Image (cartoon, rainbow, N blue to C red; front, top):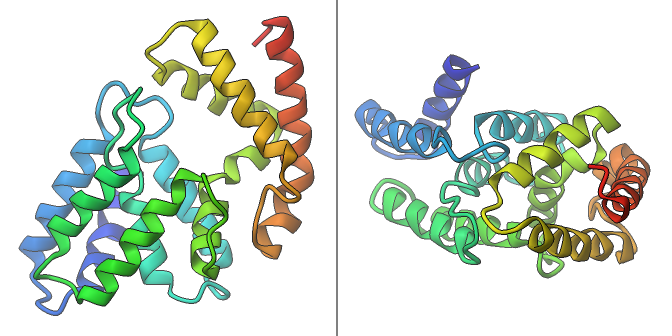
Amino acid sequence: MDALLKDRFRRLWLRCTASQDLNDAKRAWSIVEARYSEPHRHYHDKQHLAHCLDQLDLAADIVEDPCQVEMAIWFHDLINDPGKADNEKQSADHFRNLATGAMAPDFIDAVVQLILVTTHREKPPGKDQQFICDIDLASFGCPWECFMRDSKAVKAEFTGTDEEYYRGKTAFLHTMLQRRRIFLTDFFNDLYEQQARENIQRLLELIERRED
């Protein structure tokens, strides 16, 4: 998987830059790889990246700008500091700093906005912004065993107490269920909505009994 991710990232970076400087692509990859290989990551790691890229590939024909969305996927969890509320902003800032001078300003601005919407705090207006949100949440629609494995990995990254984790997790899951649609695009709604709602409801029941 690592070799495939490395090759895919470098090819994307070169497609999005004017210089076609392989050394720049190698340097950018070294930063991305180091971040996503941090030992505290149990969920937001290279496996999560690979899953997100697979989801993008499923929808590539209907995404408006696949290069922008893919670049945002690579950087949306670049900074993962458990307990901090500004990881997405820091990730976007790191991308901007790394891309400035190598990529077009309009492209950089669009990728930054795509990264920032993965906070999932507000419904994004743009089609590709909705796609990246759905891609980031696609694991909610996995089969139950996969969903639970991911849920346990997310919990393993949490640095607070169990009670703090369950309180925050419960609030987030209820927020998801209260949405008219968890997945904003028709494409991912059709694929994962029903399974995601079943997974979330089942997990909430387990949390209530503390049988996770």
